[in-house]
Image 1 (cartoon, rainbow, N blue to C red):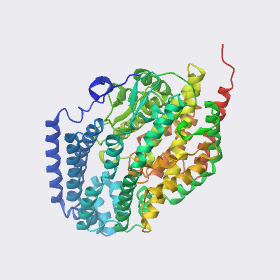
Image 2: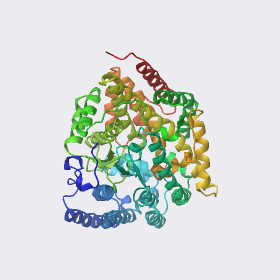
Image 3: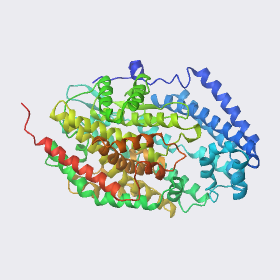
Image 4: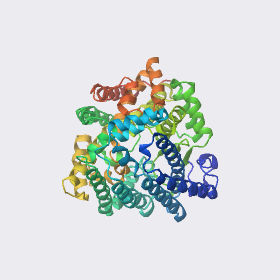
Amino acid sequence: MQKYNSRDEVPEEFKWDLTPFFKNNDEFEDSYKKTKELALELKDYVGCTKDANRLYEFLKKQIECIALWEDLYVYAYLINDQELGISESMERKNRSEQLNTILTTNTSFFAPELLRLSKEEYDALFKNNSKLEEFRADLDSTYREKEHVLSENEEVIVSQLTDAMNHFDDMSSALLNKEHDYGKIKLEDGSVSTIAPNNFRSLMRNKDENIRKRVYNLFNKKLMQYADSNAMYLNSYVSMNDTIAKIRHYKDSWNSKLFGLNLSDKVFKTLVKVTEDGYDTLHRYYELKKHALGLDTMHRYDLYLEMAKSEKEYSIPEAQKLIREALRPLGEKYLEKYDKVIKNRYIDYCQYKGKCSGGYSFSTVLQDSRILMSYNYTLDSVSTIAHEAGHNIHHQFVGENNPYQYRFPSSIVAEVASLTNECLLSNYLAEHGETKEEKLAGLANIMGVITSNLFDAVREGKLEQEMYQEVHKGGMITKEFLNKKAKSSLKKYYGPVVKMDKYAANTWITRSHYYMHFYLYSYSICISVASNVASKILVGDKKMLDSYMKFLCAGSDKWPNEAFAILGIDLEDSSVYENAIKYFDSLIDKYYEILNEDEVK
């Protein structure tokens, strides 16, 4: 496994290419100046909702400004994450955030002004200028918020305060990824590895139990020392969202989320109930993992071990080729877009100290997404490429089929594309793996994806709701509160199979998704939908394949329930989640079947 000490050591072909955003800092500064000037011009359109032609002019200029700002912000964000702690990068990102404040401040008049229109006045705008139909879905979405949009001055205040306060995720990330010293560990070959969030998972897959246990304890001991600080960050973030929800006349922050998605609470209640009712299947999975690993007792520090004892390492070119083969059932148009991801260097692969941990795909209105990851040559990293490439390809389809203003698919829709890819990858390995171990590894991978994205995301999504409930009723999120809630939920989650330890409840400390306002439930819904979609495509269901391609092209002018309807899926129907758990159960059966096969001689 190739290791790098710094970004300078990483080959260019394994770094993302950001030059389509800006070739150099001068281009960035020129665009910054242009965007700021455009943002300042937008305040001249006060009163435009009384004139259909002037309103259309404003909307065109606003989306142009948003598109330009997105490129500035995402570029600054990516540069910052590739090497954390560089003052120039942090300053660039901060300036981009401040520019957004200027943009939102200078357009803060618009929503209140639009909502002062009577229904007759609103409808007359589209009669007076038919071009406004381009923005109809967007305008309707704003107009439905009539009860929740504030006066112009109040909107300015909320925008400025949010910008000033909303840095809790950055502080938590800096603490976890840059400032903590988790110590070093001596490996079997005598080499010494520095423990960090971006190599923690790979270190925890070491065969030596003593090494795993020591890494686990060192990492978590450090986390515990700063648990109070992390709880304070979360409390401040949740308090901010809860306060904004109150200011905007929502019952609470959860209801503001439901309103924004145009989904009923029944969707999530059904999801949680079916998932928790399926804990017997989850415990069956943990029993299988314990058996496959040959453990008498399975500890928390054993959970990172790969069930299949495959020693295979995948080079980055091998991973790229493997994923392409796995995605063949989606057709040539899809593969063309996958090839673009690879050839255009959209992925920043390699890990080194100082790089932001985790993985994501970040796109803009104008640019295909860039993908950050910490490649460690395992199947887990191969799966990460497939996952994030799914986001990129989805955005390519959306970008080709929608105007600027509708290139923002909801997060609750976006994860379907990424998770469908992971299902296809694991199926391909189960069917075409070169060895029994590789086949088992493919199955183990998708079972791990479902465990994380369905069962665990529901568990942590509930914990997130409990945080908001505590703050809403006047309480405070503390280390003790979070540890107690996490430990209680994990006991049910692991059942009698996994032995808990004093660090078991630490999972909340490293969960960056808590700073994404109920994003976790998106994974649970999307893996449920993805498993339904992938299972049908894999048996040659042409109707589902055609529907899926249409689904990938749908823009944000469609609500999530409208997008899922393209696939024939109703999120309130419990069968969506029941089918996902049945699929998970069938994977366990398949694993046992291959595991017990006689070795082919």
